[in-house]
Amino acid sequence: MKMRVAILFSFFFLASNAQDKSLLPKLKSHVDYFNSIDTELVVNHVSNKQAYAWMAANIPLFECPDTTIEKIYYYRWWAIRKHLKRTPDGYVFTEFITPVNHAGKYNTISSGLGHHINELRWLRDPQYLNQYMDFWIHLVPTLSKNHLYNFSSWLQHAVYERYLVDLDTARLRFAFPMLHDNYQWWEKEKQVPSGLFWQFDVKDAMEESISGSRKEKNRRPTINSYMYGNAVAMSRMASVLGDHAMDLTYRQKAAQLKKLVHDSLWDANESFFKVLHTNAQLEDAKEAIGFIPWYFNLPKDKSAFAAQWAELLDTSGFRAPWGITTAERRHPGFRTHGSGHGCEWDGAVWPFATTQTLKGLSNLLKNYKHHGRMDANVFYSEFHKYAWSHQKNGLPYLGEYQDEKNGYWLKGDNPRSSYYNHSGFADLIINDLIGLRTREDDVIEIHPLIPDGQWKWFRLSGVAYHGKIFDLQWDETGTRYGEAGFLVMQDGKELYRGNALKPIKVRIKF
Image (tube, rainbow, N blue to C red; front, top):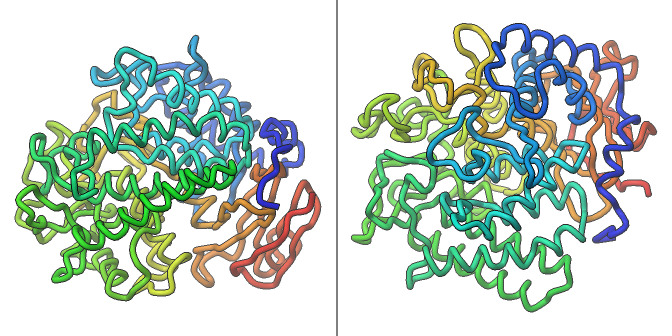
C-alpha cells in the first residue's frame, strides 16, 4: 500500500512504551556526564536538568562497541535539545546558541534547515518538527523579511524525506502549495537562461571558498544539486497527492537539471564535478561540493563518475587526520583565506560538508552499481573520524569548523560556536550506518554499512517508523543479548530473524 492516510504521527509518541528500557541507564550515564562538563550559559525550552527525561521520551536509544560513535550519538541529541525554543509561533530550533546578527525571527537561520529536518524526523513526539517546519514553510514567507531565501536550501527534499518516515499525507498536502511557490522563487531569482542555477558562495553558507565569489554569479554544484533534489521530491510528493500534472512538470525539471549538471559542471579531464564561472570556464580546484550531487542520487551510474570518490582516499585530495577537507589539499589556494577571522571554506573541515559527503557516499554504496574504490570500510573510517572530531581539550564538543591537521576549532572559544547546530549525525547512524532506508511502501528495509567483523553487536531501539516502533539488534555470537543473529522487532514482537548482518527487506505488519 503506497500511502496510509490513517497513520497519525502522534501514535509514535504514544507507542514509546514499546521501546527497550534496558538502554535507559546508559542514556542516563551519558547525559549525566555531558551535564557535568557543561556551564549551561544558555537555557532554552529543555534545561540540562530536564535533558534525560526529554531524550528518553523522544530519541531512539543506541549502543555499539565503538564507544566514540556511541558517545557522540548521545552528545548530538543532547546538544540539539539545547537549540529547541518554545515561541508564540510554535517550536523552533536555532543554529547558534547565542544571538547572531544575520539571523531572522527567534534567531533562526535557514542554512542548515535540511540537516535539521533529516535529524529531527527521528524524534518520537512529532510536535517539535511539525511546528518547526510550519514556521519555515507557512509563517516565514509572510514576514516582511523572508529569511528562508537567505541561503540555498534542499527544503523540498528534506520535507519528502520526513514524509518517508511518518507517511503523514495530510501534512504533505498542506505544505505542497508553499513548497511549489518556493521552487518558483528560486527559478525566478537564481536560474539563468541555460536552466542552471547560480549562487554566491556566502549564500550557500560556504563563504571564502576557493571557487566562490560574493559578486560573481557562479553555477555551483551546491544549488544545482539542491534544486534537482527538490524537483525530484516535488514530483514524488505530487504523485503521492495524485497531482499528475505537477508530477510530470517536476520530473521534466529534474531531467533537465540532471543533464545540465553532467554537461556543464563535470570536468571530464579531472573526473570531478566543479563550479562553472561566468566566463564559461570550470574552476580548477576540486572542492567537497563536488560530492553533493550524490546526496540526491543525481550522477549517472557509470564508473567514470564513481572514480571521483577516489579523492577521499588521497592525502593530497580530501583525506586529512581530522576529517574530510572542503577543498583538495594539493591546490595552491588551500587554506589561504585566513584562519578563523570569518568562516573560511577554502579547505578546513566543516561538519556541514562532512554530513553531505557521507550521505552522498552512503547513496553511492547503496543505490549505485559502480562504486569505484569505495566500500563500507571507507564509509566507516570516515564516519568514525567524524565522530572522533567532536572534541575540544579532550571533552565532547561541536563547533563551526576545524583545522584538518590538529582538530583545533577555528573559532576558538567564541561562545556562539558551541553546540553549533549546522550538520547531522544521528541520522547518519540510523539511516546510513545502521541503514534503515526510508520508503513509501509497507516495507522496512535495512542496508547496513558496518564492515564485516567490525561490530560483534549493536542495538538501536525505539525507532518510530510508519506508525510503528522498531528495535534492531545484532549479536554475532549471542553472548551480548542472549540471541545470536540479526533481529528486527516491531512493537515488541519479532518481525525478522537472520544469521547474518546483511541487507534485508521485510513487510511491516499492520
